[in-house]
Image 1 (cartoon, rainbow, N blue to C red):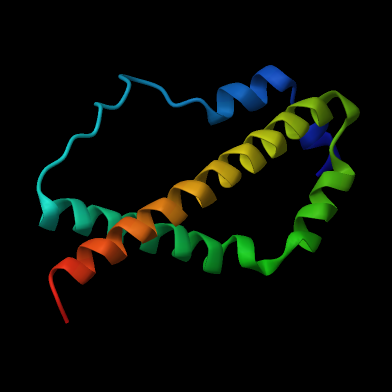
Image 2 (image 1 turned 90 degrees about the horizontal axis):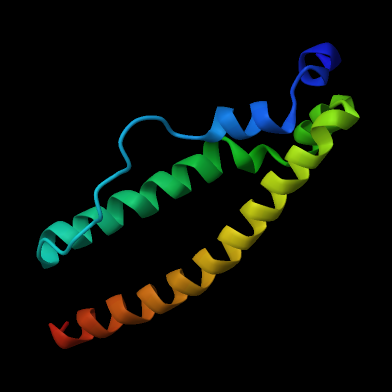
Length: 110
């Protein structure tokens, strides 16, 4: 497994994660039912990923990290930093969205 990772360069890691094709369209409001349905779908998808993939713990990832060649460490470091930054932003956005959803829920009554 170490040899597999030793051939990976920062560019190969970046290319692996880059999406191909046309950039996605800008999302737009489609009404309260559609948008809440989309919000529900996104939250369920995140929870599913967390439960089925990430929740197994860092220990199994640490075994992989220990085998990564030094030439790939910088790419991994960048991915980890990006993930941390994105998660911090997501936490703030989720807190704001939760507050907005609760206010909307309260406005429609019990």
